[in-house]
Amino acid sequence: MLSFHHDAEEQMMFPALNRGGDEALREVVARLAAEHVVVHDLIMELEQCAQILIAVPSADNFAATQASFADLDRCVRSHFGYEETELEDALSVIDIGI
Image (cartoon, one colour):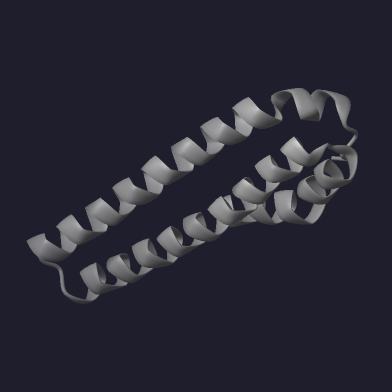
C-alpha cells in the first residue's frame, strides 16, 4: 500500500503540483520525492530482515527486524506529517485531477 501511495503521488500528484506551484512548493515536492527513496530503502531493509528471521529464528534476528520496523515506522510518520502540513493549502487550490 505504501508503494502504491508513493507511485500515485509521483505519477499524478507531484507533476501537477510542480506545474501549478511556485518554487517553494517545488522544493517541498522534491523533498517528498527524495523521502520516497529513503522509505523504499527502509522497506527493502525490513523485507531482508524478515527473510533472515524466517530462515534463522533467533532473538538477535528478531531484534534486528524489530529495529528495522521501528526505523520505517518513524520515517513514514515523519514523512506523512511533513506531507500533510506542507501540502494542505496547495491541495486545496491546485487541481491535481485525483
